[in-house]
Amino acid sequence: MATSWVNSAERIGSDLHLELTGPGGRRAALIRALREAVRSGRLAPGTRLPPYRSLAADLGVARNTVADAYAELVAEGWLTARQGSGTRVAERAEPLRSAARVPRKAPARARGPRHDLTQGTPDTSSFPRTAWLASYRRALQQAPNEVFGPGDPAGRTELREALTEYLARARGVRTEPGRIVICSGFAHALRLLFGGGVLRGPLAVEAYGLGFHREVLAAAGVRTVPLPLDEHGARVDRLGRERAVLLTPAHQFPTGGPLHPARRAAVIDWARARGGLVLEDDYDGEFRYDRKPVGAVQGLDPEHVIHIGSVSKSLSPAVRLGWMVLPERYVDTVLAVKGDREAWASVLDQLSLADFVVSGAYDRHVRRMRQRYRGRRDRLLAALAEHAPHIEATGIAAGLHAVLRLPPGTEASTVKAAAWQGIALDGLAAFRHPDTDTAVGDGLVVGYATPSEHAYGPALEALCRALPPP
Ligand SMILES: Cc1ncc(COP(=O)(O)O)c(C=O)c1O
Image 1 (tube, helix red, strand yellow):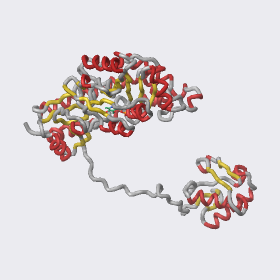
Image 2 (cartoon, protein in one colour; image 1 turned 60 degrees about the horizontal axis):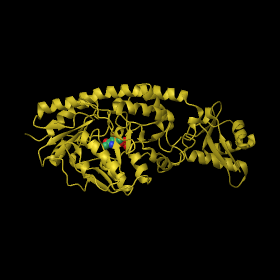
Image 3 (cartoon, helix red, strand yellow; image 1 turned 180 degrees about the vertical axis):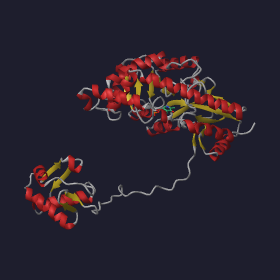
Image 4 (cartoon, helix red, strand yellow; image 1 turned 135 degrees about the vertical axis):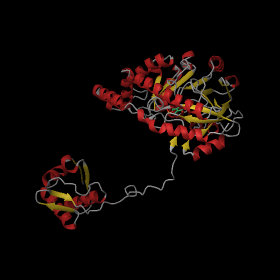
């Protein structure tokens, strides 16, 4: 049996793996292998096959064996041979259509919403393509060869060093590179921490939050206990026997306010007194407009807080890079859960992000986006002032979404009215923990980052048409 990779890139465009196996000698085996390559589509119609001599050399067979095999396949109609253009796969040789290859008819789609005002996605048209490419190029050029081997599960030192400096400067996080573990985003951090058995429930969570995160926790067997919310944020005075609490202190998701300074101090007191842990979801901490920046709670006590961030809001959720800033005692356990090598976060993307941060491109991008989102927010407020002055917007000092407060009992009908206007968005009820008896009132959660610039005006007009009258 002979197995070979035909490496005649100028002809077949890429390596072709041929296995000469089975009965009947080399010639028969080569015929079968070539027929199979055509049938399966690995050799596309029109592809020029290597000359006898080079294929013979690659496979370690006689030149005549190849010539005979080609002749046989020409006679069968699989190949064509023409003077001057060599031997090619016949145009009508139909490759086997596996289920995956059959071109599928696009399913008839119901007309989707025309205006996307759901929260969650940044302005995808503003991804800093040029600056990211420059960082990627620099990172690739400067990378030592070992970068292309298996990655360190802690993440690249370059990125952990860059984040140490950035998070200290921009978010008031106190740490060092050895306490940062790179992951592929906030949800991944939850999976590692709870699914991997680093932490156990019950976990206190805010009464309103992302259902998706509650599902991740439930899948890891973690019971979540809702903490009521009021105008100062989560009622951390209600914490009891839970081992940990998950909070969005800089900008409560989705209601939008910062956790009151007294509550920030109180939750740290609770963690110290009970040996508890605060999980800080800093999902959009960079985006604040007309209030003083709220630093990370982690800065108050790095040994009782796991600070988790990602680039999902600041850059793009497609990049899939995030970080956990850990108390020292958790570092080894988290690394053990990650395994021997990095299996989630591309090392090349890590290096690009490191360059992006160190070169100042990240700060520039965040500043530019802050202005853009502030502009978006101001247009929303102006539209409300003009067309629906009776509707109050809250949670507007930061982030990429606002909450439009609605008269009691009108949320569901307003979401429906919005759908009639072609708008996709959620009401506050969509974020409510199923076990909570707290209600924060009726409201629409309006994400203002997603629509493209030209679509935003019409989206706001449609939104105002959907709002209940005074
Ligand atoms: C409340 C909240 N936390 C965290 C994240 C970040 O999630 P991830 O890093 O998994 O994309 C988001 C979305 O960007 C969010 O809305």
